[in-house]
Image (cartoon, rainbow over all chains, first blue to last red; front, side):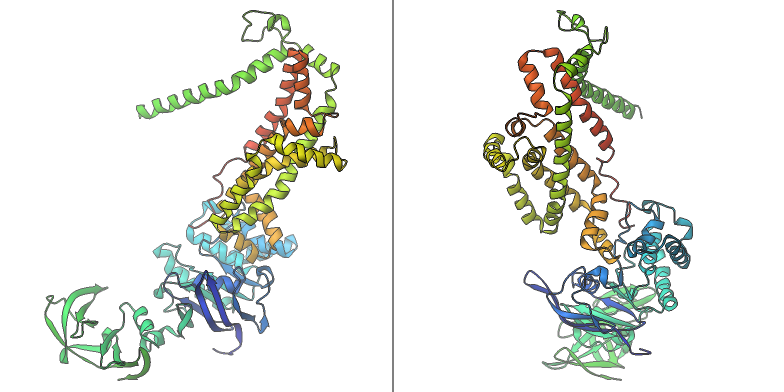
Length: 328
Length: 273
């Protein structure tokens, strides 16, 4: 990061529901001005982590620092962190204007000042015309903008967004992503958001934290997550297809992406199980001798059961499922 | 199309019949209390329609008996019961709504134990204690005692209303800068206003015609139900009808005022697209 100033730091956060630790001794540093994505399968405690940061859930142990200040014991209303919930949580008994004005009213601002701030936030998000509308009358995309406007009017220290794109239809989703990026650049603020869909992280984030089993498996740029997965689980989780692995010995295996392999020649062989078309690219899902699946890129569909030769131009070496080095 | 219309008319017909069944006794009550005895009680087959209207029954009922004081006492106690009940049931229901559902429901069942025991069994020991404490004939004491019976049901209604509010809304209010108590009273209570109105109305009504506690705790300065009872036993049926009409008027007013809140549809809207 540009200035390397730590905005938010989590130290040893643990949260248990019953006996199961949803968040397990987790550490995280988020830098000023980042757009950080927390990525993971459903049920891995992503939302719980956001709720711990904002103060709605209490961690069983661990400390939270915001701008170097310990905020672990502060209630949510004293933390100055804004959060946009997955449901957008607009107050149903208020119109759009009063929803956006709400945090300012709570903070005790004067009426004229509230009006000025609400209007400028509405202008920034392009929702000026719907200010008098009832929240039940506006579309999903508009609801999200209202929720964002409500989060940013109070000029919070940072923003948390829980699955910001999941309640939007596909068309709006693309523009919403770009808009989030633009918003971060305009506000020079720090954004952390949670998603289960890696496509929502690849081109807008500074870094992505891959969460599983209560821990970050890897925190890196999306390219690095794809090219250098730190362990086998990340390799499987990131990408359109799980990383293919060829076992070399009991502890060593080679991992590769479809485009790293050259099909048609080479000494390695695999048997085609099924053809898979993604966009206009054809993939061969194959089985190798030891029974594991590999994914190769092939120009056209082939008959199931045929034998394919291939060689690897590039591969990662894994020892006991952990990344060692890349060979090209 | 046609079948749909027939269904609609049938529905209206049934609704009207049900309404008549419920309203008829009330109508007769008002008819009797506003008519001279010559057209009602003295006749073998009294007319179902008002023949002649009079205020005489009311005037004699209101002037011959000490009526005004019991009316105000009843109103005072009923509003107190409503207020006490809400003051205790709102935090109780909020707390229960935060527990996991099974535990919350279990505690709710225990709260209803007071209602399972016949009123008289609880009324006597409580009354003895209250009288010892010098609260004999005091409206506060009566209101507190009656709240015993209204609290479980009110808590139950409010628990349902609080559970129906999406959790995110409460969290959002906290994130937007509200403290816990402010969130409960300025965000959750307005969102649960249907439940709050229903809980208040039921508590108010329970107190309004409650008899057991009223007659034991407050016999010297009685409430309306007690006075009506005394009148009926004294044999003045017409005046009792006038009393009964007076008793039901505040109930009708309050129900009409509060019924617009007692609906459950407005909570959706703001949640998800």
